[in-house]
Image (tube, rainbow, N blue to C red; front, side):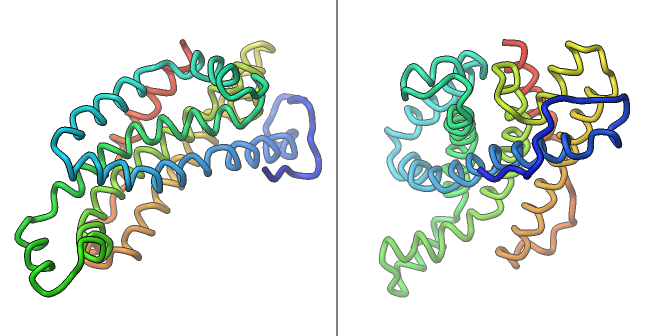
Length: 245
């Protein structure tokens, strides 16, 4: 992970302007922690989602498994993971793995639903014109499932950015440290700074995914640009649940 050169240890003063280096440092760490799980959960969900969609017996089992996993509160998962993988409890790797699992719990269903939404007539036509099963998946089915995958990725991104803050409860650096320190030292401006920055980052990620989706999926450009509030409500609700666990 990349960190800024200066690493102030705590909030000083009363306003965010007096703490810009500290805030930027936590922001950089937060982004470096949240981005890998978003990418990994998207990439890993493709083969798992394909398996869930390809075989009827596997769909219910896989989707139920990931749904149960997502129901596990985040703090207990952060505590148990080091015992399983042999890392320290404050190792950021624990957060990355846990958030990847949570992201997969959301993306697997989106991928399976997206692939299931492809019109069977289209897949049959692709086969008729000579596409192999592999070529049909990568060049026909996956692109047509793109809008559903994009919607799922938006939820995963916002959820991951939110849940990254929960690691601060265990002493893992992120914007969540502004929450814990602000509460411990009774500094409302520090808490508010952490909340605002987390929301802003989530909005920016959401917007970037929408724009990237329109670039990669040009047939989807006709839809009006809208940054949905529903993913944020779901994601931040999940973050509050994890923080309170």
